[in-house]
Amino acid sequence: MDERGGSFVAVRRISQGLDRGNTCHSTSGSAAWLGRGLSCVCAQRRESDPRPSFDLNPAQEECLQRLQLRIDVAYDSSIPEHREALRALWNAAFPDEELRDLISEQWKEMGWQGKDPSTDFRGGGFISLENLLYLARNFPKSFQDLLRKQEGDRSVWEYPFAVAGVNITFMLIQMLDLEAVKPRTMVGATFLKFLSENESAFDLLYCITFKLMDHQWLAMRASYMDFNTVMKSTRRQLERELLLEDVTRLEDLPSYSLLSR
Image (cartoon, rainbow, N blue to C red; front, side, top):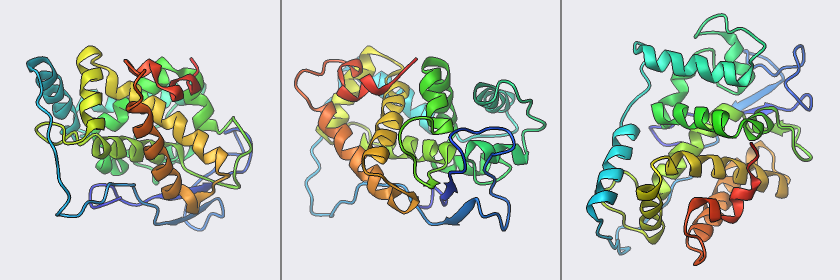
């Protein structure tokens, strides 16, 4: 990632699931975790490149402003709502295991880099936690499949679920140019049309993207060093799908079919 995103770790796959007693940990010196260095895929642009803009109608402008307000919220452990959301994420991931404390080594089972997940939210803010919760609540099977790496022929060294999720939030914000006053790409303008019709469009697109990324990961037989390449491929595929003529809502995207409830 850039200065907002922090670093990335890779997790070695030990078993087909996160079975108790066979979980992967990132404690110092553990053979189950490799070093840092994978980064978020962000668009590179020359200063001379033209940047068209697209006018918004009042409804689209209001929807974009509401989403930007969400994007601007940093995770703050002093806010009860944020702490409860983090605890809810744990309960969705491991309903049969009690979380001993919000700062705990247990979080490494989910693919956070350390015992305090708040340190990994710099790249995506509170919205990245909301995205993970939306996936867990609306597509619980896909959430568990991604968390436990239950589909396909997996790599020995896998991407860590939670930190990958934060990377996806960050990538989507960049791809859709959501911090601009108005969209400057056709992809961004197309997304705002969907957003004006569905206020959960960003969260839904996040779910689609996560499953698409995992699908690309498997198709490319990727390992941890390939994460950036997989993210670039995922972004290209997502941009192509968003611009398909017969796509009138996010549920029409070909990759939506990868999701399972």
